[in-house]
Amino acid sequence: MSASPGPDGTPAHVAIIMDGNGRWATARGLPRSAGHRQGVEALRRTVRAAAEQGLRVLTLYSFSTENWSRPQAEVRFLLELLRRFIRTDVAELHQANVRVMIIGGRDGLETGLRAMFEEAEALTRGNTGLKLVIAFNYGSRQEIARAVQALAARVAEGLLAPAAITPELISGELDTAGLADPDLLIRTGGEQRISNFLLWQCAYTEFVFLPEYWPEFDGQSLARAIGIFRGRDRRFGGLKAQTA
Ligand code: IPE
Ligand code: IPE
Ligand code: MG
Image (cartoon, rainbow, N blue to C red):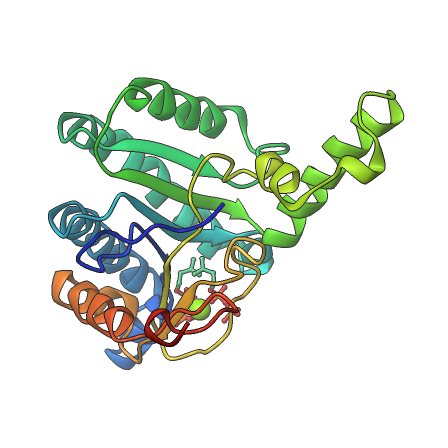
């Protein structure tokens, strides 16, 4: 699905790889968990700033399919932070007309967590403000594999011809079905890689890599990244508008 920045060049959809919590804490002589806790504060600031700055969709990478390989205590802490965030913040997000969506694999997640996701989505389904998409247990290759399985099942039933499988049909089977592709992807923490995030959806997304750690991120950081985005020349394989 094509992206559609606003008339003033504001990206409609910003995706963020919230990275650097652990290093932020270690640099201060604190346990990694302190970085994750501050990361939640940065997340709250960023959601508010995204709405204020006129974004339509904000997608946040909160936990990858590969993050399960971390020490059990850290995984448990991250899960507890997410549970607490949903318990304490969803009502306020609902008040602010934010629609909450969760992407990523649901199979194998504990039922309590799945129920919380479903409740948050159901409560905010009718909201028309910012769409807040939280990527949890998310891996882009796994998401694509799930989409291929769904299409293959339709082929096997004789409901779909292989030649009828188009990029649009594949997009429609992804967890992000119905959302415009991200215009801008921000990664904090200095690494310049995508770490299995939105591989299909980022075909023509602009990437901005920031050295600051996620707990330091705020509305100004977001505005700065959007400023960099505005200075980019998006061509989508074509030519610049004025030379076309
Ligand atoms: C991002 O910070 C949070 C998650 C991946 C869950 P990290 O925990 O990756 O922090 P660093 O990259 O080790 O500093
Ligand atoms: C990406 O960060 C995942 C999230 C921010 C949730 P990682 O810290 O897991 O990525 P790598 O391991 O540095 O590639
Ligand atoms: Mg990291």
